[in-house]
Image (tube, rainbow over all chains, first blue to last red; front, side, top):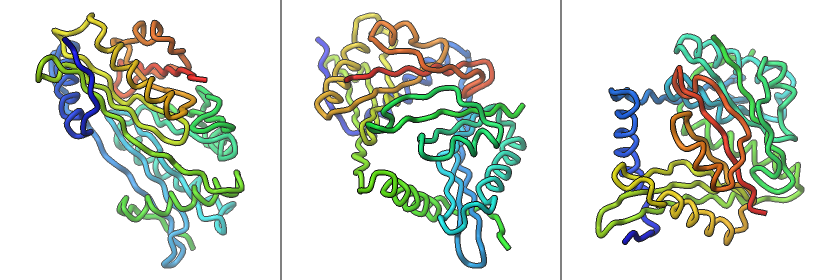
Length: 140
Length: 140
């Protein structure tokens, strides 16, 4: 008889890691260690932090989680610079795909200019009235 | 003169959040709660965990981060039960979209049977030679 119950996150996560290792063994015959890393970049003007980029690497994938530039400093290419630095780091790290998401009122045009391709759009994501665009750039 | 350097994520993350909040408030004319939550549900056979699901909620969206069932317990509908339980909670909470990803060798057909729709596929994700497939289900 199978019971279904809500449990603490840490407990469930540990269990899932074990299963995924088993499954990886079935398919790859060897466990490849997860390569995980966070890249955090900042742009400063003097002492002031005016922009930043946060990205997560897993294996040969880099996900850009945040890219922000303070309102007063927008239009000065700071976002472009941060993206270029991240991309250069990604090349050194042998990354294949860089992905990111942006809401319809955010930066789709900017990412197009940076060479990213929109591979999907979902309506009402992450909330009603907002469309989410999903972007990818292959850098190899 | 703007200069760029790597920084600690604990410095970058709050600033990114603050800028996003500001932008979101400007877009919607009001503060919108992130409504963030993690759901973790386990399936038990007697006292042993035999399957589990982890889902993350943000605003009106739920992302299934992990779903797995122990090898000897597969093909018994346990994955379906876990997914159904997450969907039940999602409906209760007024979630609009459920999203998830799967690798080429995992559960594409399973998710299609559960009413999920394909919305994207990327090659060499997260490792070379693997494809990541993107699914979603609209609850309303």
